[in-house]
Length: 227
Ligand SMILES: [Zn+2]
Image (tube, rainbow, N blue to C red):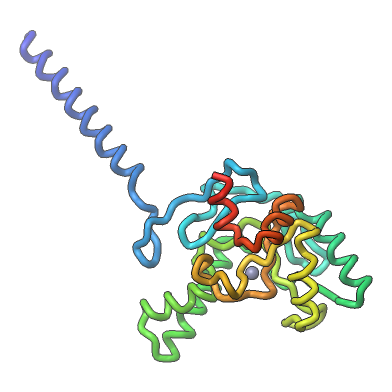
Protein backbone atom coordinates (compact mmCIF):
# COMPACT_ATOMS: atom_id res chain seq x y z
CA UNK A 1 0.00 0.00 0.00
CA UNK A 2 2.78 2.40 0.94
CA UNK A 3 4.66 1.52 -2.26
CA UNK A 4 1.59 2.26 -4.36
CA UNK A 5 1.11 5.63 -2.66
CA UNK A 6 4.77 6.45 -3.29
CA UNK A 7 4.39 5.61 -6.97
CA UNK A 8 1.38 7.90 -7.28
CA UNK A 9 3.27 10.74 -5.63
CA UNK A 10 6.17 10.24 -8.06
CA UNK A 11 3.79 10.10 -11.00
CA UNK A 12 2.08 13.34 -9.94
CA UNK A 13 5.46 15.02 -9.49
CA UNK A 14 6.65 13.88 -12.91
CA UNK A 15 3.45 15.12 -14.54
CA UNK A 16 3.68 18.48 -12.74
CA UNK A 17 7.31 19.06 -13.64
CA UNK A 18 6.60 17.95 -17.21
CA UNK A 19 3.69 20.37 -17.43
CA UNK A 20 5.84 23.25 -16.12
CA UNK A 21 8.57 22.56 -18.67
CA UNK A 22 6.09 22.46 -21.54
CA UNK A 23 4.27 25.58 -20.30
CA UNK A 24 7.46 27.62 -19.95
CA UNK A 25 8.57 26.47 -23.36
CA UNK A 26 5.25 27.54 -24.85
CA UNK A 27 5.28 31.00 -23.28
CA UNK A 28 8.67 31.52 -24.91
CA UNK A 29 7.39 30.56 -28.33
CA UNK A 30 7.17 33.18 -31.03
CA UNK A 31 3.76 34.37 -31.99
CA UNK A 32 4.90 33.83 -35.52
CA UNK A 33 4.80 36.11 -38.51
CA UNK A 34 4.52 35.81 -42.23
CA UNK A 35 8.29 35.65 -42.49
CA UNK A 36 9.14 33.55 -39.47
CA UNK A 37 10.70 36.49 -37.62
CA UNK A 38 10.58 36.83 -33.86
CA UNK A 39 7.39 38.79 -33.37
CA UNK A 40 6.70 40.11 -29.91
CA UNK A 41 3.92 42.13 -28.35
CA UNK A 42 4.42 45.91 -28.09
CA UNK A 43 5.21 47.26 -24.64
CA UNK A 44 2.86 49.66 -22.91
CA UNK A 45 5.28 50.81 -20.16
CA UNK A 46 5.98 54.16 -21.81
CA UNK A 47 2.29 55.06 -21.92
CA UNK A 48 -0.47 54.67 -24.50
CA UNK A 49 0.92 57.42 -26.75
CA UNK A 50 4.35 55.80 -27.08
CA UNK A 51 3.31 52.26 -27.93
CA UNK A 52 5.65 51.14 -30.70
CA UNK A 53 4.17 48.76 -33.22
CA UNK A 54 6.10 47.70 -36.28
CA UNK A 55 7.21 44.51 -38.00
CA UNK A 56 8.83 43.40 -34.71
CA UNK A 57 6.11 44.38 -32.24
CA UNK A 58 2.44 43.46 -32.49
CA UNK A 59 -0.41 45.52 -31.07
CA UNK A 60 -0.69 44.58 -27.36
CA UNK A 61 -2.96 41.65 -26.63
CA UNK A 62 -6.62 42.60 -26.06
CA UNK A 63 -5.71 46.26 -26.59
CA UNK A 64 -8.82 48.42 -26.34
CA UNK A 65 -9.07 51.80 -28.02
CA UNK A 66 -11.40 54.46 -26.61
CA UNK A 67 -12.85 55.49 -29.98
CA UNK A 68 -14.30 58.77 -31.11
CA UNK A 69 -16.05 59.13 -34.47
CA UNK A 70 -15.11 62.04 -36.71
CA UNK A 71 -17.66 63.89 -38.82
CA UNK A 72 -16.76 61.83 -41.92
CA UNK A 73 -17.24 58.50 -40.12
CA UNK A 74 -13.57 57.72 -39.51
CA UNK A 75 -12.60 56.95 -35.93
CA UNK A 76 -9.57 57.79 -33.80
CA UNK A 77 -8.49 57.29 -30.20
CA UNK A 78 -10.49 59.98 -28.39
CA UNK A 79 -7.35 61.11 -26.52
CA UNK A 80 -5.78 62.49 -29.72
CA UNK A 81 -8.90 64.35 -30.79
CA UNK A 82 -8.36 67.79 -29.17
CA UNK A 83 -4.90 68.17 -30.76
CA UNK A 84 -6.10 66.77 -34.08
CA UNK A 85 -9.01 69.21 -34.18
CA UNK A 86 -6.73 72.14 -33.33
CA UNK A 87 -4.28 71.14 -36.06
CA UNK A 88 -7.01 70.87 -38.69
CA UNK A 89 -8.53 74.20 -37.60
CA UNK A 90 -5.16 75.89 -37.98
CA UNK A 91 -4.59 74.26 -41.38
CA UNK A 92 -7.98 75.44 -42.61
CA UNK A 93 -7.21 78.95 -41.39
CA UNK A 94 -4.22 78.84 -43.75
CA UNK A 95 -6.23 77.60 -46.71
CA UNK A 96 -5.31 73.91 -46.49
CA UNK A 97 -8.30 71.57 -46.32
CA UNK A 98 -7.40 68.29 -44.64
CA UNK A 99 -9.52 65.23 -44.08
CA UNK A 100 -8.71 61.95 -42.32
CA UNK A 101 -9.03 59.29 -45.01
CA UNK A 102 -8.08 56.52 -42.57
CA UNK A 103 -8.05 56.61 -38.81
CA UNK A 104 -8.68 53.57 -36.65
CA UNK A 105 -8.78 50.20 -38.39
CA UNK A 106 -9.95 46.93 -36.93
CA UNK A 107 -7.63 43.96 -37.18
CA UNK A 108 -10.07 42.44 -39.68
CA UNK A 109 -9.88 45.50 -41.96
CA UNK A 110 -6.09 45.52 -41.78
CA UNK A 111 -6.07 41.83 -42.68
CA UNK A 112 -8.37 42.43 -45.64
CA UNK A 113 -6.22 45.31 -46.94
CA UNK A 114 -3.07 43.22 -46.62
CA UNK A 115 -4.63 40.20 -48.32
CA UNK A 116 -5.88 42.37 -51.17
CA UNK A 117 -2.36 43.74 -51.62
CA UNK A 118 -0.90 40.23 -51.74
CA UNK A 119 -3.54 39.05 -54.21
CA UNK A 120 -2.92 42.06 -56.46
CA UNK A 121 0.80 41.31 -56.61
CA UNK A 122 0.23 37.62 -57.19
CA UNK A 123 -2.12 38.51 -60.04
CA UNK A 124 0.79 40.47 -61.44
CA UNK A 125 3.10 37.50 -61.52
CA UNK A 126 4.80 37.51 -58.12
CA UNK A 127 5.18 34.37 -56.04
CA UNK A 128 3.21 34.32 -52.78
CA UNK A 129 6.32 34.94 -50.65
CA UNK A 130 7.44 37.78 -52.89
CA UNK A 131 3.91 39.26 -52.95
CA UNK A 132 3.81 39.25 -49.13
CA UNK A 133 7.21 40.87 -48.85
CA UNK A 134 6.37 43.62 -51.34
CA UNK A 135 2.96 44.23 -49.77
CA UNK A 136 4.49 44.55 -46.31
CA UNK A 137 6.49 47.55 -47.50
CA UNK A 138 3.29 49.40 -48.35
CA UNK A 139 0.65 47.94 -46.04
CA UNK A 140 1.47 47.05 -42.45
CA UNK A 141 1.30 43.36 -41.63
CA UNK A 142 -1.99 42.74 -39.77
CA UNK A 143 -1.35 43.22 -36.05
CA UNK A 144 1.51 45.66 -36.68
CA UNK A 145 -0.42 48.67 -37.95
CA UNK A 146 -0.59 51.90 -35.99
CA UNK A 147 -4.08 52.27 -37.40
CA UNK A 148 -5.07 49.38 -35.14
CA UNK A 149 -3.96 51.55 -32.19
CA UNK A 150 -6.23 54.43 -33.26
CA UNK A 151 -3.19 56.74 -33.01
CA UNK A 152 -2.44 57.09 -36.73
CA UNK A 153 -4.13 59.22 -39.35
CA UNK A 154 -3.77 59.25 -43.12
CA UNK A 155 -4.47 62.76 -44.32
CA UNK A 156 -5.82 63.74 -47.72
CA UNK A 157 -7.38 66.81 -49.29
CA UNK A 158 -11.00 67.19 -48.34
CA UNK A 159 -13.16 65.49 -50.96
CA UNK A 160 -10.20 63.90 -52.73
CA UNK A 161 -8.58 60.54 -52.20
CA UNK A 162 -5.10 62.07 -52.20
CA UNK A 163 -3.22 65.01 -50.77
CA UNK A 164 -1.31 67.70 -52.54
CA UNK A 165 2.28 68.68 -51.88
CA UNK A 166 1.41 71.87 -49.95
CA UNK A 167 -0.55 69.72 -47.50
CA UNK A 168 2.32 67.29 -47.04
CA UNK A 169 4.71 70.20 -46.59
CA UNK A 170 2.49 71.84 -44.00
CA UNK A 171 2.12 68.61 -42.02
CA UNK A 172 5.81 67.76 -42.19
CA UNK A 173 6.74 71.21 -40.90
CA UNK A 174 4.06 71.84 -38.25
CA UNK A 175 2.37 68.62 -37.12
CA UNK A 176 4.92 68.16 -34.31
CA UNK A 177 3.51 71.23 -32.55
CA UNK A 178 0.23 69.32 -32.23
CA UNK A 179 1.79 66.07 -31.05
CA UNK A 180 2.04 64.28 -34.40
CA UNK A 181 5.09 62.90 -36.18
CA UNK A 182 5.74 61.95 -39.79
CA UNK A 183 6.02 58.27 -39.01
CA UNK A 184 7.68 56.93 -42.18
CA UNK A 185 10.18 59.48 -43.51
CA UNK A 186 12.00 58.86 -46.77
CA UNK A 187 15.46 58.76 -45.16
CA UNK A 188 14.59 56.15 -42.49
CA UNK A 189 13.10 53.33 -44.57
CA UNK A 190 15.97 51.07 -43.49
CA UNK A 191 14.76 51.39 -39.90
CA UNK A 192 10.97 51.58 -40.28
CA UNK A 193 10.85 48.98 -43.08
CA UNK A 194 7.94 50.98 -44.49
CA UNK A 195 8.15 53.12 -47.61
CA UNK A 196 7.95 56.92 -47.40
CA UNK A 197 4.38 57.86 -46.51
CA UNK A 198 3.94 61.65 -46.51
CA UNK A 199 0.27 61.24 -45.55
CA UNK A 200 0.68 59.02 -42.47
CA UNK A 201 1.01 60.79 -39.13
CA UNK A 202 1.25 59.22 -35.72
CA UNK A 203 0.22 60.83 -32.46
CA UNK A 204 2.80 60.71 -29.65
CA UNK A 205 1.91 63.90 -27.75
CA UNK A 206 3.47 67.35 -28.01
CA UNK A 207 6.46 66.84 -25.72
CA UNK A 208 7.68 63.73 -27.53
CA UNK A 209 6.78 64.97 -31.01
CA UNK A 210 8.88 68.08 -30.46
CA UNK A 211 11.94 66.05 -29.48
CA UNK A 212 11.49 63.51 -32.27
CA UNK A 213 11.10 66.33 -34.79
CA UNK A 214 14.03 68.43 -33.56
CA UNK A 215 16.40 65.49 -33.46
CA UNK A 216 15.22 63.98 -36.74
CA UNK A 217 14.39 60.62 -35.22
CA UNK A 218 11.83 57.95 -35.98
CA UNK A 219 9.82 56.34 -33.22
CA UNK A 220 12.03 53.23 -33.20
CA UNK A 221 15.10 55.34 -32.40
CA UNK A 222 13.29 57.46 -29.83
CA UNK A 223 11.90 54.47 -27.92
CA UNK A 224 15.28 52.80 -27.92
CA UNK A 225 16.72 55.90 -26.31
CA UNK A 226 14.04 55.94 -23.62
CA UNK A 227 14.59 52.34 -22.64
ZN1 LIG B 1 -1.53 55.11 -42.58
